[in-house]
Image 1 (cartoon, rainbow, N blue to C red):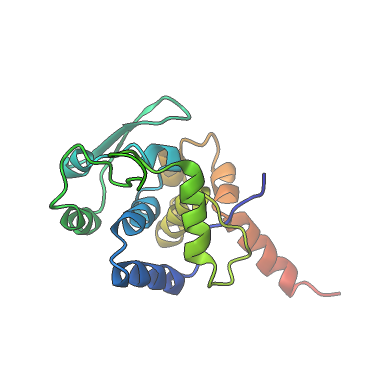
Image 2: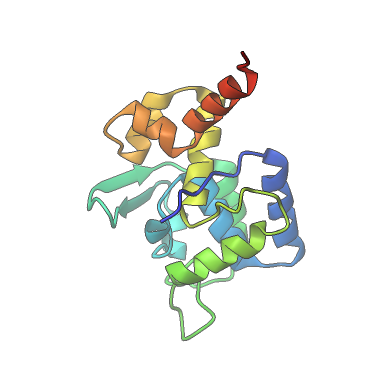
Length: 182
């Protein structure tokens, strides 16, 4: 399994959002926006329904850890997403598959969507389902420098794991080795 990277460039993030809105691609926009604004694993995003978004906080049981998690989403992001789904039924999945009636998208399809969304950008080719979660973590850390809060959000056992997970350790190593010369 390859190690996927976050999307570090905010201009790329803004461009992806703009392109998805221009195409009126609600499903992919919601997938992208939830992923980069919540930091959930893809397996925890896919089961979300419209009624989940209508609550003040998102409450999920993490598929991987089986732990309950409460997340208070940014109000601007939440309002934007609610506006996109205002005509949808409360039981509709936020990220619906086009196959069948009201089924969530599959992990393999989200991988294909993310690869297609990012193929025009030169992003190491290291894009996968964890890219959205890592993007959230990377930008959260860059904005707050609060590795302990991020460690708790991600349920990691140690801050060093969190820094390595979001690619920050690699950034630091790269900048140090780039400057080193004998």
